[in-house]
Length: 480
Image (cartoon, rainbow, N blue to C red; front, side, top):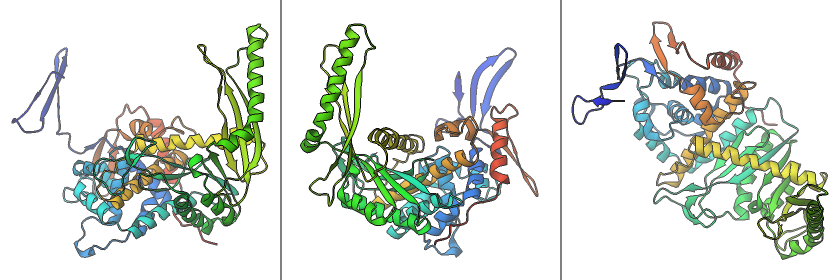
């Protein structure tokens, strides 16, 4: 770009000047008119028509406003905000410019080119977030659980739920932020629950920044599991998490709820180390033998030896003993360093898998949940919890969770067997959503003209055919 001309010192640019080509000067302006760069808004609307997410969220929130004086119904507000987050506009004040965007208006059910039917501004969305009560937050979180249940045509035989916390760094003087030593800053510590096989979000709960006690973990998961049991009374549920979930309250909850099991990481202590010493000694011996053979040129160089064992163990706070699986690993030293012990423990109520299979094929798979958390934080900016009110920040987290649900369902319903079948939200946004569109509105129809050289033309045709032609699946599952 060579220069920018302005009509006055404080005005926005009216014309942009670029490098010329032989025989032509190159200029750009902002007078394109009925254009949008967010084709993804109507794709998201097609997904929502299939799953009924916005309707569920709307039903969960009570709207105390007088309908006679409402310009923006609650459903329109939720659809606008969730769609904008899912399109890469995570801040509420992005609505100040996007409220006139023809495709976001079209996705909200409004005629795209009228000038007197703008969507809500950022201040209106801020008031909505700040107006939600505890009961609204609770019902909205439960609506996400119901949305997850509705993705199944029938009750599954078994599911695995991955639970994990993540940090949302504080942005000022917000309610219930605390300093968390593990993360090294003031933050919130929300809890996220995912279905392990599909990556579907079950629900999300904003928490204070301090490490949760076992009673709190059990209280949250009790509500989640009871909500699932209303629809799936006979489904086996496996709850999976890292070491700070291995507390007696959560173990007791799993045993009481019936047809459920747990597998959690377990921190080491002197008793566990004593029980593990026999197997660790064997691992050290195997490593020494391999190193000796490698030095003689007999076998390959081995960087580690890993053995698995198990024993029953009960901490003083546990009401009963549980099966503990030991990974007895010894890492070979490098650069003159001696070998290093690396034992790990897992506690579980499962009895059938072997120790090695349970650790490597069951427990270690929980690492995938961290990738889904990264999608919510890095791609959809779920950590924009910068409001002063805790409940307003909780609302923001739930709205971002809803945007994640739309992306996950887009992959399942529209992008399966395509190059974007496992793509992260950011990739989908850049590849599929950020497409220029010229909008034409006639008496009885709206036409959307996409670029003739659109690189994802065939993919868009496949996605739209899958989403729009299929029957809507928004009916709530029946309780037993």
